[in-house]
Length: 444
Image (cartoon, rainbow, N blue to C red; front, side, top):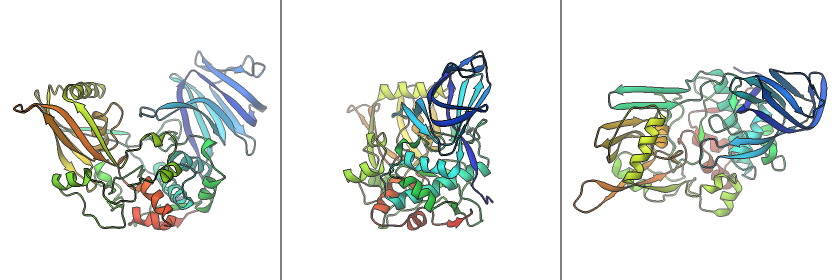
């Protein structure tokens, strides 16, 4: 098991033909000190300095390493965040650590090399707001640190796609292994959106206060500690989103100080998901939401309970497009029905049946369901289906999804944890609540 703080490589961007930014402090490049604006372009498979123009005027590189000269930082223009999500955008971002640029056939790969504790101080400010209660930031730091080290230690396939029978497709998406760096900077791994979201050293204080502290399983291993935005009232077990048998310490918990029975059937799912029960992540206080969520996440106000409506023809077209994009040669024809077949304790569907005029298709797991039923990603797979049609006809005109929660639901519920901290719970109590089968241990 790990005994000292590791340095890691974070992939900021890939496939760029040009990179521009600013060395805010002196950086060493090939024994030359560089400061100020820079622009590097890919030409004929090599990296060329375009600005400042006197620097390496005739040299072409396949790799450029700009080493941080103590407490330095660099800024990059037009960094893409939220890739393939509804809030995707470009930002100017600033980073500590060293900058590594690699020339590849697909374009420039931009990598930030940094110690994991400094990395985590950015992660917790990117995942949530740095204004969130300190005890929540500490709980998030321990969870994110555990996830990162588990990712470095354990293998996980990037994608699993399996036809169980001629009508049943199971897909799940793991983190996999990046070839040129340890983690990417977006939601596929952990959000890592630069230093600009730090506030009065609060995130640095949270990582420093928890430095080297991990969630440890009963078997004595670092926990693969997953987290998500809002569970919707119950967290979920690991195998609803990923493979069976993984992470047995990731179990469902009631996100409340009150007792609620887990979802057992379609009747209880409908009663749960069409009401607004008491739960830590059922947050209506505008002041608290502004305190805990980054600005772009505040654009998703209906995270606890939500509603999505599709006209039948609209949904037919969406499913056709999504199935083709997934390279699935499946023609459902006209959609007659959507039927949940398997649910977890939180109400999240892990196997969903699409009944069409041409064929029936059963699809799992939760992320694949969310992808098929939205132009980007449905908030979660915890939903019940309402069909509306013309009287006297069996063919629905409209499908309405009444849902709850935001994300896969496994592990730490970020909004629920932030509400707990706001109510006075300590970081340790928060982690005991969401990870009841794990313990805390300082490893370095």
